[in-house]
Image (cartoon, rainbow, N blue to C red):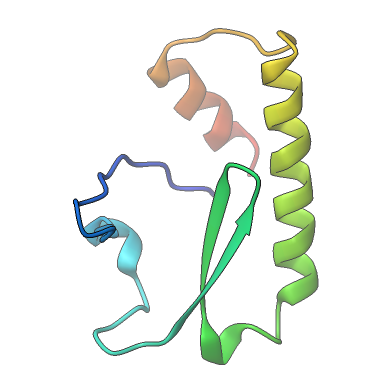
Length: 90
């Protein structure tokens, strides 16, 4: 299931990954940063080749969803309803 949280960028361009999302990431890990329009994906460098196609498909689906939202085709819901809908997608 997808996890969603909010973080901020510092004046130096640093972003903190929320603790509950760090999982298998640890200090010193090298990360691949993929930017696709307004989306940024972080991937551990040692896992990059293994799931690249899955990551690219996720990026494509996310970009299509953002385009629908920009075109006014999204739907509004509370954060609780959104998380409930995400949980139902298991």
